[in-house]
Length: 73
Image (cartoon, rainbow, N blue to C red; front, side, top):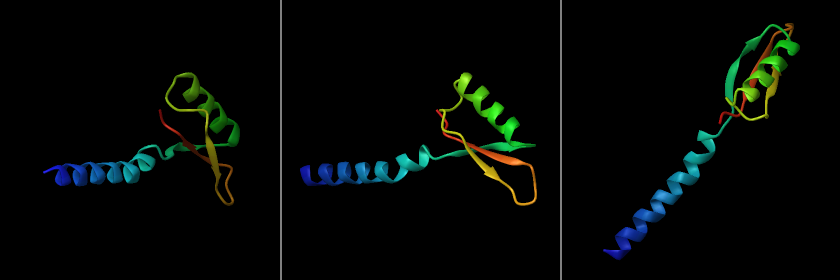
């Protein structure tokens, strides 16, 4: 019985190790017309407590548009 409990606890811990990083991965917050608009949206989201101040910007080839990726709270 104890072996089953230990094995179950080990399996639970292992599943948390796999799931926890994915649950805290960056999320796509949208596409903005230019870099300044994306920076403004990032700062507004941080001020409103929607995500941490870890915004990443993704430029698109032959376009002024910028994708915004954030770390959600």
